[in-house]
Each structure stands twice: as structure tokens, then as C-alpha cells.
Image (cartoon, rainbow, N blue to C red; front, side, top):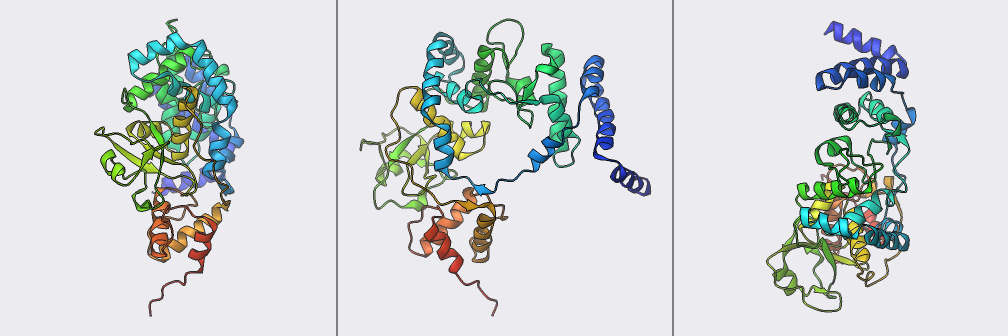
Length: 395
């Protein structure tokens, strides 16, 4: 224990760059054990540079809670729809082959591509190895990034990649489809059949890899991601939520219809109802493939954006109603709201400033108790009413 304590004191005395140099030596030992070549360990890992900006980005917290309206309008726009349709025409035959082989329709692959890198026009600008080594040498998520770093080094060996051309996101996501190294290693495939898998230079490699990834994540062939739906004026919003999918038969009984009024149908499938902008915004019925999209990026906003962008690329129409203007909340205000819900007995977990499913469920419970529309969305009336509530006492 004394030796460990002394080592910790020594580490604290070292500058960040000196600690980094020491960490690189330790990572080189890990690389040797993982099977990384001596050349890559020496000439790539050994030359990695500490990037203070990467640590800053990792610690960066948003000032405001992003609303669905802001998120959606920035991502599902005319440029992405038209560019997606151009890429559909360019790769139509190849995308058809991928659909046959993997069961994922073209429009979904294009939607992921469009959201991740604007169809390859922006793949990031951070040197991947420098980013991963910097994060691996940082205590916050060292184990995860050390593992991703080993996969990236093994990829350099396997695919004969030039580490100088390996640029990506600050967290190490790479190529047209922004795969982390572990996903690249496990799911990337040689779409253009040139003997190498290069997710930066080959659009076909990237599209085929995305299809293989989605298939392995559980994509269900022949099913949509979901659809926009219409709700009756008297709808019971306590039924809403990603984690509570219900059979179409129940939604039919509750008066949920397709846009235009047609019935949902009688298929033996379940769907979860989502109202990401509250009862004044659009409603969506999300099926099992929506959960597959979330395994790529675990954000309901992202999942809806991918699904709707795919629909638009395929030629379907826009949303049936305009997106509402929503109130802006700071992260601190959202923490206050969460703290208040917890104090009042609506358990939403740790106050983290994120408007997630747990917080929305707590808001819905509060709204129901106050005889408000229980859509789980904190409009200003709800926020103010919540803050006016007296804290319970122990008396």
C-alpha cells in the first residue's frame, strides 16, 4: 500500500505531458500483448501526441438542453434529402445488392451516412491515434479507450492503413459512417472487393459495412422503423414512452391512426408511441427497427431523424404539422426540475440535466396529478407549476 501511495504521489507530481509519456510506454506493453506489430507499436503508438483539446472536448457540457425542434430542423433538411436522393441514384444497383444480402433498404443506409458525415463531406479532423491515446491516458474512461486504441492499432496492421490519414471525431469515430475501431474491426466489410476495408476512401466499403453492422444489431427485414401517426384529442398520454411498446390492436382501440386517418392495420407487432416535442408536436409510432437504430446512437431524437430522413430520401412526404417552438432550458434549470420532481416523490434518478425517458415519465406523473395533459414535456406552464410546489415537510 505504501508503495502504491508513493507511486500515486509521484504521478501527481508529473506534468500532464510527462504522465502521458509514461502512459504511452505502458500502452506499448499492452499493444505487444494484444498482438500489435513492433513497427506499429514503435512508429505509430510511440509517436502519439498529447492533445489537451481532446480532454477539453470530453469534459465539455452543453449550456442548454437541446429541443427536438432544434435538433430535427438542423438534421432533416432539404440539402440532406436532395443529396441522399442523388446518392441513391449514384449507388442504386449496389444498394440493391446490399438490400438482398443484408436486408437493410437503401434509404436507411443513406440516412445514417447523411447524418454521420454529410455523405462523406465531413469525416472529422482529429488524428484518431492521438485522440485515442490521449483519452486512454485520461482516468475518466481509460479502460474503454485503451481497448478502442488496441483495435485501431490492429486495424493499421490488418488493413495496411496510413495512420497519418486516419482522422475522425475527437472521440475516435472514423470514416464515412463514423465507426469506432471495435465496430470497424468486427463489422466492416470489403464492399468494393479490392482486398482492403477503407472506410475513409471507399463509399462502397462504408455502405456495405453499415448494412452488415445493422444486420448484426438485429435489423428486421421487411419492417419500417416506424411512422408518424395522428392522435385523437382525448388521447391518454400516459401510454407514451419508448420503453412501453404496445400491440397495434391497442393503438387502434385508442384511436391512433396513420396520417390521413387510415387505420394502422392488424399486423401482430408492437410499437412505442413517442411525442418528442409534446402534444403540440408530431407523434411517432416506433417499431423494433427503431431500437436497432438506437443501438447505433442511443438518442430518441437521432432515431427519429434517421427514420424520417430515410422516408424523405425514399420519396415520402414531410411531417403533417409544423414543429412547435419550444422553450429553451439551461442544463442547470433541467437539474432544478429533476431535483424538484425527486423531492415531490416523482423518482427520476440522479439530476443530470438531461431530458431523458425517466425525467419525462416523472413530468408525466406530475402533469396527471395537476390535471394537465400528461405528455411528459416540460413547457413553461409545467415548469413554473412544478417550481411553485411546496416541498413536503417531515412534520
